[in-house]
Image (tube, rainbow, N blue to C red; front, side, top):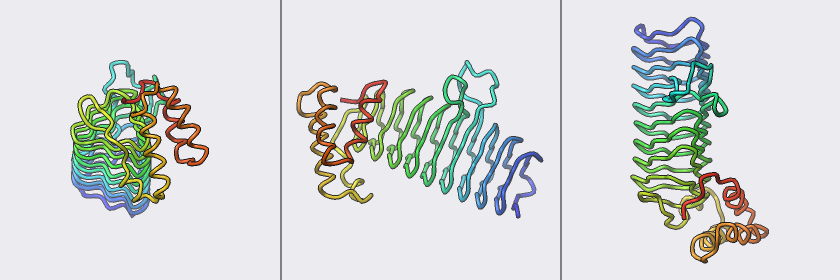
Length: 258
């Protein structure tokens, strides 16, 4: 059974699964799909070709699935896809993708997204991430699983944020943050690894020590990026956790913060 406030407007072609709740004055568009047990608060607008999974909680005044803030957008039927078990707090804005990229803006599962977060067109957000208040992503940004963005973090278009990376409050990110790295400042600079977060997520003490050694190889040994990548690749033979770091450096388009 769909629980809807009498003031909510739901297009007859929208597809809402069992036990979806829609709050007062919310608007659900024609091409929207919402999975079971998802709660939509009051004054939420969900438009475009948007699919939302199960067990999400979306708070008041969010705008999800609106057209991209991109002058090249010409009305193509691009998408926004949101997974399961996400918390999306007040005043968040997630835009559709564009035909210049994959055409889809994606958010995975079990993400904790605080108030006033903006995800621009074609962003790809993994699972188990945390976005503190006012974190802002420009277009085409990729955020890997378990990353944490501090409040007022601002990310330039096409940047990538690696798994288990973390930013401090007010970070301005113009290049990529490798996996496991802590970054802060304007522009962002590296400040060690997210050792406490790694331990909380089951990394062994030996693995954390290996990641610390790889960090020193990347940032403290005076090596070029290619030399550091080669050295960390050799270290990864013993500690496969370092493969994520090697692959990330090899795939970076904007260069990594150093």
